[in-house]
Length: 203
Ligand SMILES: Nc1nc2c(c(=O)[nH]1)N[C@H]1C(S)=C(S)[C@@H](COP(=O)(O)O)O[C@H]1N2
Ligand SMILES: [Mo]
Image (cartoon, rainbow, N blue to C red; front, side, top):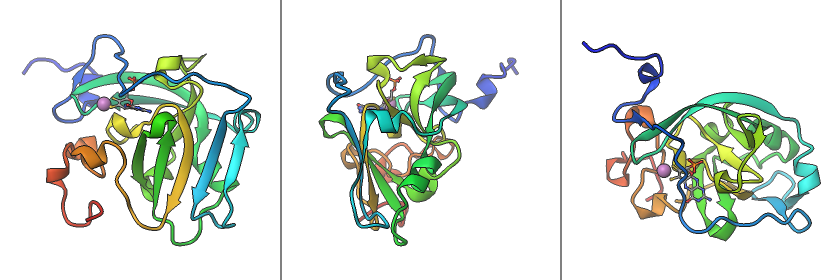
């Protein structure tokens, strides 16, 4: 058997290590205006109110760092990214959801979205990243903030995040509506919606 590198041994099935660090997204790179930028937490909040963070407030939240691999459903993986940012758990503490919330929708500029189960959102490794490899995110990587959900395919790692919607019922996001798997676990190769089992997604 050919020898496997340490990084190769971390790859989920069907993935290969990309040479460079490709940038991919649908649509244009938005510009960031710190004066008018707002991050909204809305939907089924415990208070029933929409919570808004201005950039100063959001960037003042406690941060942590995380080293994680990144698996795109088109089969390349970018290994060993060092992210820094606000853990999703910190946001859940700042703005608690109502008791029946089981899902969240991540909303970005231009209406891009991805849905996550609350159990995936609340993981210790889910982060609102503001830095990659000790530098602020570049515009095309999601500046000023993107979510990083390293245990799911990378389309769930939404760039240019502007809000979180707490949901009591699941709904599909942008790619999930267009044929991609509702849950997106790369270790299970959950690539396409036709692979979904009953209970994996909304009807
Ligand atoms: N807002 C937004 N976020 C997005 C996307 C997008 O089209 N729009 N594409 C996703 C996909 S499919 C991938 S693989 C990763 C790519 O992240 P990268 O450009 O940092 O490599 O971003 C994800 N986040
Ligand atoms: Mo992707």
